[in-house]
View 1 (cartoon, rainbow, N blue to C red):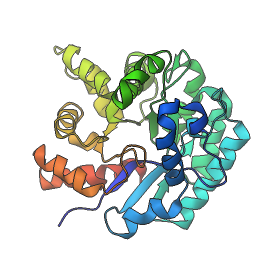
View 2 (view 1 turned 90 degrees about the horizontal axis):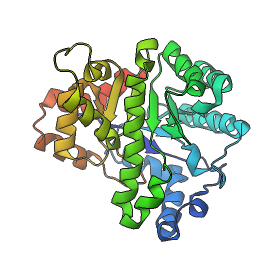
View 3 (view 1 turned 180 degrees about the vertical axis):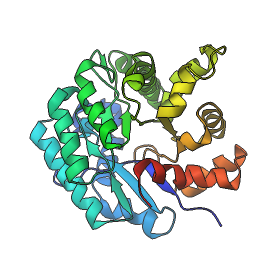
View 4 (view 1 turned 30 degrees about the vertical axis):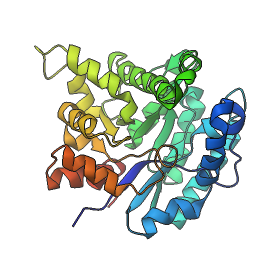
Length: 313
């Protein structure tokens, strides 16, 4: 019997908020996003794989970029209202939906106060932030207060990719792979910035989650780390602070990530419904079998690691 699966990487837009992606994405992507937007706002669709037994639970987030205006701006009051609704959803669907707070990490002390409110008062289980903003990465001075609050509360920080410019414009002509490469690049940049920028050294309690798209940063650290100092190099630091998801369900990538970070730092994550509309369990366990994970390791990746990271039973 297969272990239960918790999908850590799921997006949802409460119906009170209007998706804006069809206005900001290139014309060739708009038809697909019209359908995706309907799925993002459909609570019944979100619960379908849980109700049919494919999943035990979803960990949901609401990316600010999906509801921001043309300039990428999302008012602070909207962020607060969004977190209120996510908390209500998690309470109403207790045990099946776990929610992460949407946080504008680059908003300094105001962002930190919202972390305290959303996680400390509303009970959200972590925070969801952009990997970068303009020329800034997540190690920026403006983002430090939010990260400090998350570390103090002991909640994970999901550092999610964005569409970096001008790279995204350069890569759009090359289709989805080109766009994902641009997004993966900034996710990898954020990972490197957290390590080499001293953030983990300053915040020993900080735990972050990155997508499989950040593999480039992990691979470079593994290849060019100072192997004469195995206990103090970049990979050693990442093993204490970084979890990576299984987005794409590539057996070689999952195996390599587990070998570098440790199997205890890999969680099931699908990027639902943007890249994966389900069912998720068959894709996950097929990849884990191909990658030769033991049954105990499969259980850790499927749900055990997510439960520990989120502090849930």
